[in-house]
Image (cartoon, rainbow over all chains, first blue to last red; front, side, top):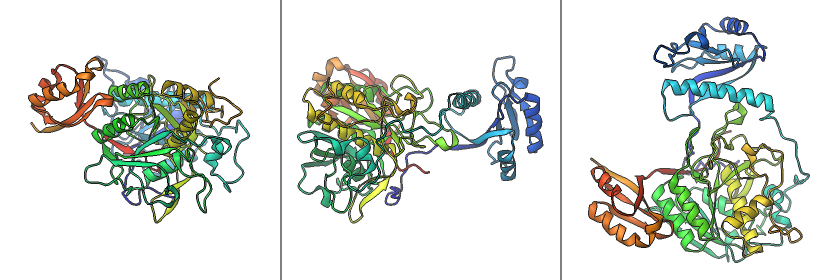
Length: 443
Length: 77
């Protein structure tokens, strides 16, 4: 599998384990039995949360490190090992025990490291785990619609899933801006296309020395006929505006990003695709600057679409909130699904309200697209790959009806979505679908 | 105090006066790098000491330090 960290070595910041572990005990287990079991499985003290809940001044008093704290209302324990990693033998023994339903590392969720916040986080996570168990969230989703592709002979699974291969539209006459790590202007799949490219990164040409930007551009606007490969581009005749706002190392100054957004709007782009961002904390509001830009863009007939973020680790039941700028209400946030239409393990979710919701889902696992020469093509995973699928479909919709601009285009995308049985928190309105002539979307 | 990279958001009602606001910010000590008319932002840098004065310039809706964004890279699975 293609890994973008090869050339430049970047990652969006990943969840950082605290060193502690969260242990979910068997349901309906008595507190005394749970405490006894935890004592038998470890050499650490076991404290029950009600025994040390608050001091006279209302402050939560934390127990010493090397203590297991059992939250009796939740049947969840936290192995509070301080900065030390708990002994592997103890973790293994707990994982194997029949009274332990699940366990996973604890991750830092908050910028603040205040102890009260930690306590609140533990309680919140415990409640979240209980809710997941009750609602069945996190279980594999049945395939809701029978459109799973049998093969990638002629088009990638992503192109088929969004129905671009059935669309009579190509994105002709529509300008899509992809603000990212640049573009390989020499790529043979894009010769003869209308490409406008500009670098906003000081000291770097528009050439994509990373790979991320060229991959995203390929998905949004790659060719219909890619020699030797299935079709991987959605809007294969759209005009491409490649704005380099992130350096070859994969990170970028916000002033360069703002400059790229300003450029795309000034150039009259109908769609901006941004597979970039930063993680947010639980409870963090959106940044008013991005919201203001999103509103200015919509007023100008331009829709900004952003990747929701890759910080979740659902295999450990860790679900992270939608990042910034995708969490701005006027910017569309896109989650990633795999070819069975299950939400991707890494895909961020609508945990924060006020813009932090997922708006749409799109293919984001094992996505084949263009890669800078000499490599030519590669596969990758991420909400970064889902975002340009939506941007490409947006271009097809914009071509289908000149009234579909700005908020009208947003509404048309939302209406296009098919239900894939994902919770709204994970998948928003559903899987984005390209317009085919027999199904007018602006009804 | 040291130089800080800053982002200034302009009042929606005063965006037609963005050139005047650039002049005013420059006068108070900001080095303006970019004037972004379509989105109503001005970016540049200034000494930390001049921030309170810059915030008071007529037409400035908000001012904050510039941050960093990342390509949403391959998740480690």
